[in-house]
Each structure stands twice: as C-alpha cells, then as structure tokens.
Length: 108
Image 1 (spheres, helix red, strand yellow):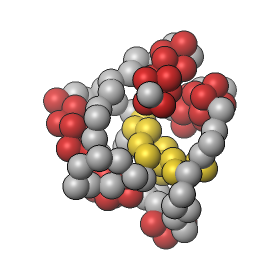
Image 2 (tube, rainbow, N blue to C red):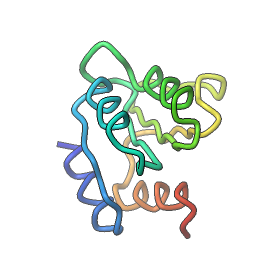
Image 3 (cartoon, rainbow, N blue to C red):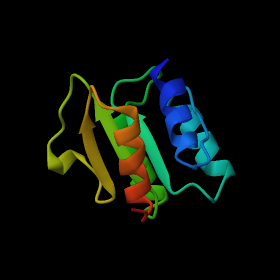
Image 4 (cartoon, helix red, strand yellow):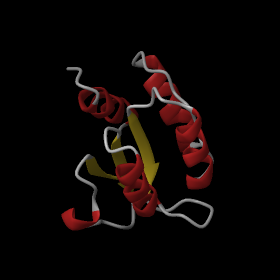
C-alpha cells in the first residue's frame, strides 16, 4: 500500500514512476530502461535481495542513478550506503519524500 501511495505522490510532483514489487523486478526495469535517474527502495522487501544489496548493485551497474533507501526498523551507517544514496527513516511524509527525490534529481 505504501508503494502505491508513494508512487502517487511522486506522480503528483510531476515525475514519471515505474513500480517494482521487489529488487529482482526493479533490476529488470533498470535493465530495460535508460531514463531512470532515481530509485526509491525500502531495506526490507520481499524476495532474496534487500534494499541495501539493491542499492549496491545499482551503484555498481548504473553509478549515475541516485538511490533513496528507507526503513522503519534498520538504520544503516554511512558506510553501507552507496556514494549516490541517502537514507530516510520511516515514518516519513509522502510529500516530503517526493520533495527529496526531486532535489536528488537536481530540482528545487
């Protein structure tokens, strides 16, 4: 449910959104597209790859893509985040998260 609400908030901020149900699905979307600039992920999600591993893979394969990593239970230290990533603790305001994603894209 949170993914759907976050996607709507990002769309309301004028962004194009591609949703993925897990990290494997996200990697398939990234493989198929060359216009994704930011990925928003939770650390804990279904499937065999968590958000930290996903963010490391994104940084390795697509270093130009920014990653926003969220969690309500796990708080990674700075060494666990890729150079192009940032952590946001849950609960977060959907509109504030949309603003942070827009800022990561270089907007104001």
